[in-house]
Amino acid sequence: MPIFWRVVYWTSQFLTWILLPFMQSYARSGGFSITGKIKTALIENAIYYGTYLLIFGAFLIYVAVNPHLHLEWNQLQTIGIAAANTWGLFLLVLLLGYGLVEIPRSYWNGAKKGYLLMKTYFKAAKLMTEKADAEETLEDVMEEVRKVNESIKYNHPLRKCVDTILKKCPVEYQEKMGRNMDDYEDFDEKRNAYPSEKSLVKLHKQVIYSVQRHRRTQVQWQILLEQAFYLEDVAKNETSGTCQFVHTFQSPEPENRFIQYFYNPTIEWYWECLLRPWFYRILAVVLSIFSVIVVWSECTFFSTTPVLSLFAVFIQLAEKTYNYIYIEIACFLSIFFLSICVYSTVFRIRVFNYYYLASHHQTDAYSLLFSGMLFCRLTPPLCLNFLGLTHMDSSISHQNTQPTAYTSIMGSMKVLSFIADGFYIYYPMLVVILCIATYFSLGTRCLNLLGFQQFMGDNDMTSDLVDEGKELIRREKRKRQRQEEGENRRREWKERYGHSREDSTRNRNVHIDPKESNFSDISTNRSASKYTRSNNRSERDRIELLQDAEPLDFNAETFTDDPLESESGRSFLYPPFRYQPGGRYLSMSRSRIFDDV
Image (tube, rainbow, N blue to C red):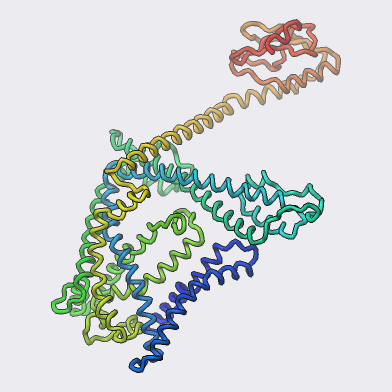
């Protein structure tokens, strides 16, 4: 176990402090080659790495000059571990204080009628603004790409870089811009101001960012529309007396037969309208109890006589009876809840568009790597905090007990007594203040005052955004309804008249005998008529051309095999019909042929 934890700990530290920052810079780089991206990443991280090396070098000089300090390699290693854990614990308490309150409250508010729908309207208004901004940014960047594409011709040395940028653009913009292959003049003959490779690298970086952001907002908008439509269906079905859940729009993806059988409309109605609110309330109460236990234990885990930490009480009761399975279950549930509170807060954090974890595979590489860095930095102090809550860390509980495998690789914190006896014990008590601040939404109110719109029920700006989002959802709903109605009409048209047109076309092709062709005039009720055909080959060709171009009349009472109805003896050099509103074509004389033009 010590070997296992040593490998896990040092590999995670290598990831979070060295490899992942380098990969972040590499992913954000706009270079056109691997060497260029590596060079850019090294330059960007030189300041980052240099700051840590400067601090560490100053510390080593201080130790070497001071004759009273004699530090060995193990002690230096312990100091490095303590510094990393101190930074992680500082961040851990901030995230834990938010998650302990927000997670139970989110489930409790989810059980309220209309709360989720109002919040979805609010998100729709904000997302529409972000979506419009992303589209505008993409248009500006594509305009810059178009100018570069027109200035740098096919025989320019930087043309390969321009082609790489064009491949990252959306398909519709690629089709508009194309490639300038029509100019065969040498690019040096015209003394134009060509962009440099550095400017192309910057443009490449902007294209990658703008395209990814535009795609993300489009996907999120569609997902948010589905959520809003479903929540509106839930609100509508709550007042229904049929106990059958009715969807306004059917899901485009076919559901599994197993799900259709066990999750039928009746079960869906009982779950969404009756059971789910009560289930969320019960779950919120249970999570609130766990949160109170965590807060109490964080404030009292330093007390060993008497033992006040509830986590330590549960573990010690199982220890007396040597119930190892109970110890495993208690430890698993405890650290699982702590992990949920901390890591779920990481998923909720958004630093403008610099760091943002978006669902449905819409997160960029930089944010994914940044979240990986946070997880690597939070996990070791989270484990140490859990061991302190259960009194398994001898450096905190001050008991002569056998150290765990994890604390054995952390080293003795006696080298830095002010951290072991001060920061590690008293700093977690700040979780109480953070929980109170989260309960009264102080952070949300501060952001709202700074101009960042947040969902607050007692705010005029929130009400305006909710109304705006409601109108946007209503507009999209009408648009989708019109699309479905159009598709249904086209489907019915194909089912009703598709075979009739095929039969009429087939009958026209069957009439090949030129001797038996009798024609008559068009009557008012469009009764079936016979036509006389001329034996002239050219006139018959004109008839065929007119037959192919003439649309069918679906409003007529009857259908004829041949839509070319004209008076006997009329020349086919002139259009024989005049269109009348309602889908009917009436014959007209040669003298009034252009009256309707």
